[in-house]
Amino acid sequence: MKTVMITGCSSGFGLESARHFLAQGWSVVATMRKPDSSLLPTSDRLRIIQLDIANADSRARAVKEAGHLDALVNNAGVGFLSAFEGTSEETVRRIFETNTFGTFEMVRAVLPQMRAKRAGIIVNVSSSVTLKPLPLLPVYTASKAALNAFTECLALELAPLGIQARLVLPGQAPSTRFGANAMAQMAGAEAPPEDYVPFIEETMIGFREQITQEPTKSEDVVKAIWRAVTDPSCPMTQAAGSDAEALFTA
Image 1 (cartoon, helix red, strand yellow):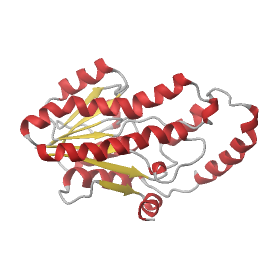
Image 2 (cartoon, helix red, strand yellow):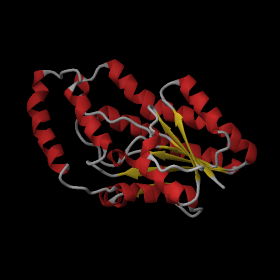
Image 3 (cartoon, one colour):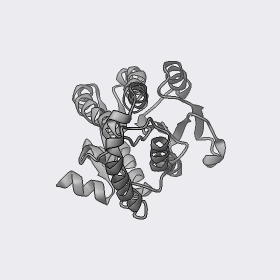
């Protein structure tokens, strides 16, 4: 039986991916900052482990507890909407600690065991905003664009060791808690200079209109993650969702 570790399983793509892998007969290590066993079906193939990927001790403890892994899906991330000038250095570092550096270090933590057996798959979940950047997302987009470049380079150096690194680029999925959290964080963010206010208000109207649409569904992303882990012929990078696919092929 194969085992996958999935980060960020408390909601959204991570939660749905954990459910899917379980349904397909895999052993799943589902990680969450605040573990909640009620979110997933009871199974002897499921372990729920506490993990804050921005914390070094938490990462080390979680990977040790997980044990043998055939695949790692780095899905955990945090969204953030704000004009850059209204975003403090502390906030920028916090976003990168989770979306970028935390993901880097999760990869570092699992590589020794994968290298020892000359097998393993690492899937990093990024974002389609790296294909077509949007205003008010400079920090978030930069954190994910770094993840794209990291994965592309990583794939080249791990291939001779029998380890695969792949990238999934989800489109906009406004109904997930991720998108709602990003908007909520903006409401509590540092206030940008007044000069930005008219533009921000106009832009936010457009963003809120998109919430009524659903260009990317959770099942689109789950399907892409599943393929990235299980299909040997899968391309290194996959767009997930009709909007992301349109940008990827443009």
